Amino acid sequence: MSRQFKVVAISGSVQRPSRTLVLLQALVERLGQQLPIEVRLIELAEVGPGFAGVLRREVLPAAVQDHLRAIESADLLIAASPVYRASYTGLFKHLFDFVHHEALRNVPVLLAATGGSERHALVIDHQLRPLFGFFQALSLPVGVYATETDFTHYRISSTEVLERIERAVEAALSSLASDARRNTSAA
Image 1 (tube, one colour):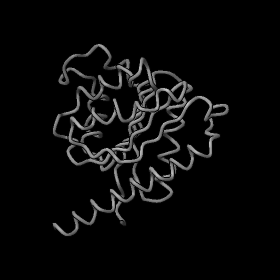
Image 2 (cartoon, rainbow, N blue to C red):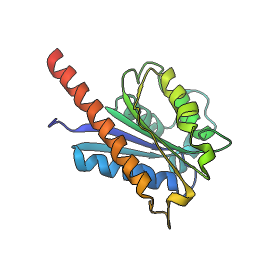
Image 3 (cartoon, rainbow, N blue to C red):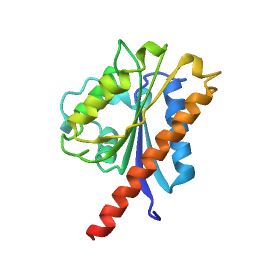
């Protein structure tokens, strides 16, 4: 795999500092240590106000339209959200309301979430996977969930979370390698 892969990392957090953003950055950093990647980081805390009240894609600001094109052309998505009311943030969902329903077909998606306690850990399986299932994306089998206690001063301090990041990145690498082999043999 010598080509550079387009990775779009989306933080569903609407505030800073953000544990979700820290987790997302750790995933991107680890992936970048293993593979040549070009990363587009989309932080809803920054871009959310530009589309929060918009109802149709054609009236979105140019910067948001550019982010959507990046999402729709990514080789890999890394999608992370904090848990609000037992689900991902509303603004996270609103962003994906603008993504074309066929644009993510067969695109690998690494899922991550943060929450106040372990009781929200199933958000990945019960909320995020169905969202990306609608798009027919390939949700990777290993997601990463972290609680407030897994961080110290907005740094990941849990060895279990760091190990899970390793497993999730391995799954992403495997998926990208399979996709690269399929594309090479089809050419």
